[in-house]
Length: 197
Image (cartoon, rainbow, N blue to C red; front, side, top):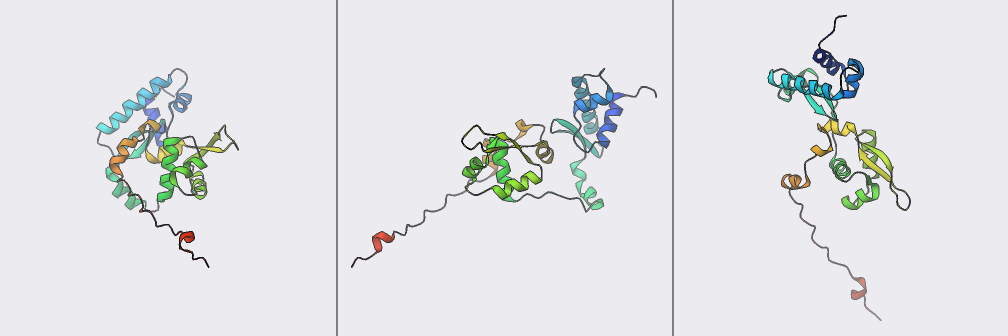
């Protein structure tokens, strides 16, 4: 076999890879003569070529790797062809819990519940099944509670290169309108209204 262009090899690897292709994985295929930094550079160049070429595909850097995806502008056409694509729909409680974990990680269930004000055990179970969060250890505290962190699948799903790409809390304040505090409920003080004989 004649020596192939490394960019062509990387393009083929991106095409067959189900998950974002890590530069270290590509190095295993290309051989030790290529440094990981060289491979990342080649993948970045290939990504730029796709973006400039007005193609139907793009190469995105997500979850610390590179992935071949369809151009978002072509989504209506792709969805017509494949109407059976399984989409993951997260409920508001799941999104809120996931946001707390993403910004506070690692976080314990008690810490998440303190912020959200509700029991999150069912939501945590769902997020674990979806592989958006993982058990990342135990906190050095009384009872050694379980710590939760986000996963690479979380970054893939939300198109993040790394956790540094999460919007800042200041940016989020401009997107999400502040929720009004509930009006204080009148206290039913039975002791003061009870009549004595």
